[in-house]
Image (cartoon, rainbow, N blue to C red):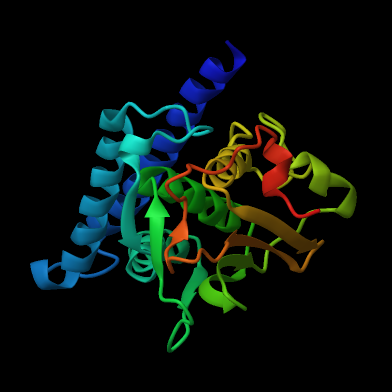
Length: 251
């Protein structure tokens, strides 16, 4: 029952975040912040279309259970272009908050950037991490990176925000937990974003880690372990076998 409730709350959480972002972009268009002609606002309209399609996908997929993986929903896709779409979607939202969002890549990748997994779930994981980075950064920059760490493929989401106190790090993935400074920053939320990110990482056999310094910023790293077939993510055995969410965290 608890998982069912969290699944429904998680879907409401992600759909709400999705359309709040779309509303911000739409308000900017109405205010003429990016011009008046169709040519000037076309990139914004494309971003809105992508945001709307994401919201529709979340609702129509009926995949509320982000903590498990259905073999039917697994597909292969290119993470390099996938993150480019994520960047394009959030760049305007970051600008609205007077923040700079950067997408940093390598010139080449040791084993390519092909990933196998549930693209909607992975999108939910990434969007929650980027949304949190924007939410808890008052000024400065946010970095979205796709890198190699030896043979593994790594996604980094780093901000220059308020940071997380060392004694709170162990709590941030607990469902419905809110940081004590959330109210001070006037940030609302359900306390589900990082829990959803952890569940998606666990379901795909990924590792997620966090490094943070108070008043300097936070960096989340998602590791896609190298597989012998050269494609990152889940394999035919549908990892992981462990039921412990903690196994997605570094030891």
